[in-house]
Image (cartoon, rainbow, N blue to C red):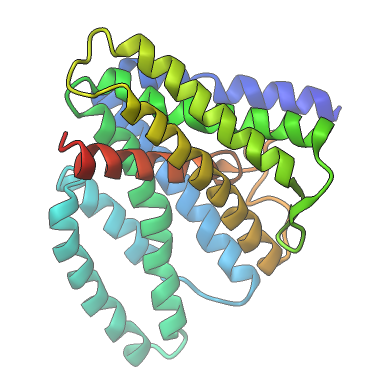
Length: 264
């Protein structure tokens, strides 16, 4: 039954590929949808520890963020306005605390903004090719790490955070991500001439590191709260944040590298 659930989960995840191929406004609305679900999972998880994130403000931030077309520069002003509103709420209603204020902002940034980088990369010149860097890095990192750890892993990586993670698996994940982006970079380098090949290797290495941190951070949050999965939305895979934990960080790292290092 567990195996069947995983196959069913994979079928549910498969349509994501369609939105990546379509790109544009379709991918934009898809990222909004998964952001809303992911934020719901995050806020619900925090309530297990008796925190009370102010979710209407969090969702309002997400909507306003996309109304300004996910403009990172304008995001600063949006956050300042949101903070002014949020700081007033615990004064008006003592049901909320300033920790709740912090968690509200954290949920928006960690889920809403990090997911938006998928759309923003797709909107770049040659974005229909570059957006695949996110998913190739994440999927190959996760897959190679899993099998390397399963067959070669002995020494634990972070036993207090994720007992099944091994050092061998971590090295395998780093190799998988780097190899995936090196091969893909070599392929697209024939028609994307403004990115030297070695940058794909660097991006692969960075993703190999931070995809694993994304996984470990999600595990650390769940361990702190005392839950196994963020939700059971995807059979055999958990929730959006369970399945996309490494993608959140891959999209952020790749966007920052393309924008800040390569000025795309």
